[in-house]
Length: 464
Image (cartoon, rainbow, N blue to C red):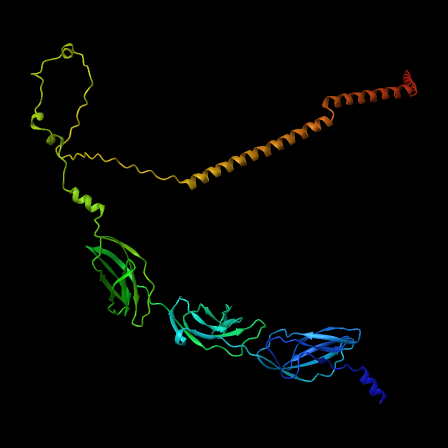
């Protein structure tokens, strides 16, 4: 009994949950889970039989600590369970689990999609779809395309309590399913989804190709090619002028031609677009501008001056009386002519012109074509020349500094070392000192002994 009593005294007591009671309902997805436990313990919170996290414990001098916890993720609307358990920090000894408490998270209403009408929308790529609907105030609408979150937005509140919203999702060609859910400020997500709509995205009809646009009198003739089964609409100045059905061809592309209604004189913009039997339209062609009922300058000049017209020659322009040659026989000679002097201006001799030569008397000024200046090239050359000059100046300065340093080093060595003359002088002085010392040494040495006398001559030989 004593051992069991000590065991019960040292066992960790179970924590007590105070903020959540049985069958309680919450309008938030993160309800507060709080209570009391023993000091120096940690509290584990289990939601729906899964560890959700550890509560924050604050010790108290009384020995009973307080703990609090918010789920780290918003709980989905519906029924949930919560269980808590304490663990002693020093020994890691755990308490018994608390009793299971069941609570509810209130659901929020899902949005309602009202567009596209009928739940199906067909359109051509790359156009954008329009998905619109209604939702309660203060909610965030999440749009899902093919089960994946594609976009979200918070509705603008309305005095009625229900706000509208609209999305323009970007979808690829094909068939796609779209639905929406709602989320509130506490993180609750609607357990139900909105009604589902379908988006059918098709490739657009090929754009017809305009081969030629010409004017014929007061009408415009448009010709080109389009896909088989197409109907080509012709719009002039933004207004539909008419349409022409394309006759099928085995190649899949057929030729078409269209003549417009009578038009007023002036410039007109022509655009064509094609559609098929189901109503699918192609992209509009590039706008072409055509002049109707206006003669060009070249044609006007041609009418004013026929090509075969030949200007009259100088001889044809002169009257017959002037064509007679004046020999001067009947004209009296002037004083200057009698004296042989020539006075006045000298008349230039006329240029000989053949009869078949065409003379051009047009007084129109000749146009002299002046080529525009290539300013980018000129700027580049100027900048390059400037850089070359800067480089040359820098190079000369560097060379000058090197030369100055070399000269300073040479003169520095010359000043620090004795000259060649002084060196020779010192060498002579040293030689003289050596000679003097040798003479003194010779004078101090004892005299040498005299040389020995020469040997006596040999005796004469005896006489017989």
